[in-house]
Length: 48
Image 1 (cartoon, rainbow, N blue to C red):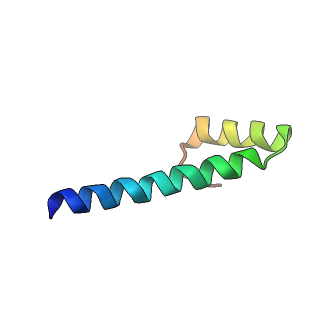
Image 2 (image 1 turned 90 degrees about the vertical axis):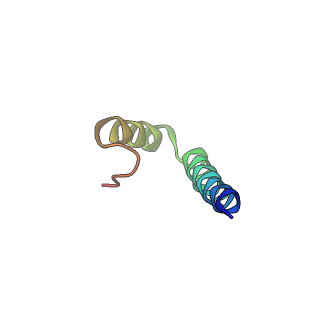
Image 3 (image 1 turned 30 degrees about the vertical axis):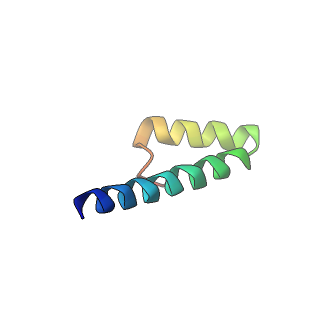
C-alpha cells in the first residue's frame, strides 16, 4: 500500500508540473519574463 500511495503522489506532482509547463507555453515574452522574476524572487509556490 505505501508504494501505491507514493505512485499516486508522483502522478499528481507530474500533473501539476505538466499544467505549469502548459501555462508557460501560453505566455508572451513579457509575461514569461514577469513569471520568471516572480519565481526567482518568491518561489514557484507563492503566486502574487
